Length: 312
Figure 1 (cartoon, one colour):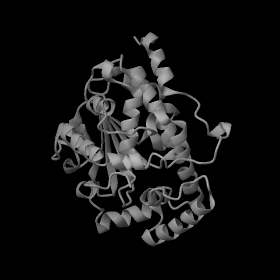
Figure 2 (spheres, rainbow, N blue to C red; figure 1 turned 120 degrees about the horizontal axis):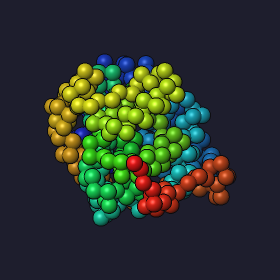
Figure 3 (cartoon, rainbow, N blue to C red; figure 1 turned 90 degrees about the vertical axis):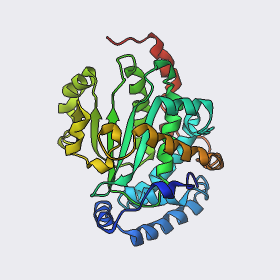
């Protein structure tokens, strides 16, 4: 089971008030979750393509975050296992203290806060730590990103959703092609195989180009989505949306500096590296995949094409 060592010391369960709001949001409680979990494991036993030793907490969290939708939970589980076949550059050789992964940790900050909002939502942070473009290797950063995501999926309690904070500090127009490719791959896998429920997105220290792009395409978004995206030229404007005790000192909050929090989370991943190795074989065993289940692009090929791409 990935990353259980010391995780319980970092992540705290929701209190009773938070849990009540979470149950309402996810349309179920632990009794309903347990019943559906039994049904899922019956399905797994009958399907030879699905490994029987898939992480039980992961299954439980799929049930919770699909709002207890049995068929959608099964589809997400299958798609996750298929992604592990389709993206070996991301899901194979997951060694968090390898030189490539350590460099990626020093290039990008990625972290999910152990504290929840009053409504039971979890905060996620993403930002550039080292602006050196030569250190920005898409596959290594994606490998780290999904180690972080899979670790969060082994925390055995439900949340109402995620509030994401994207920090553009240090980003230049030269970073943009790689950053966009990173998010294209990330979103493609997330859409098929994960069930993070994004409640709001906060963009901090936006580049002028980011503001222009958002202004030009925001009218295309559904009203509900438009109302969930906030741009902050200064971190202080986050304070009217998020309590200070939920924010790192990097953004004027009372938690530790974001670099320190990310380093602590990295150390937990390293302490659990044998668990990542044990779970590498847990993938789809259904033989040749149908065409619609095969991946449509390869990040490393597109990354190579960026050497010839310039943005004004």
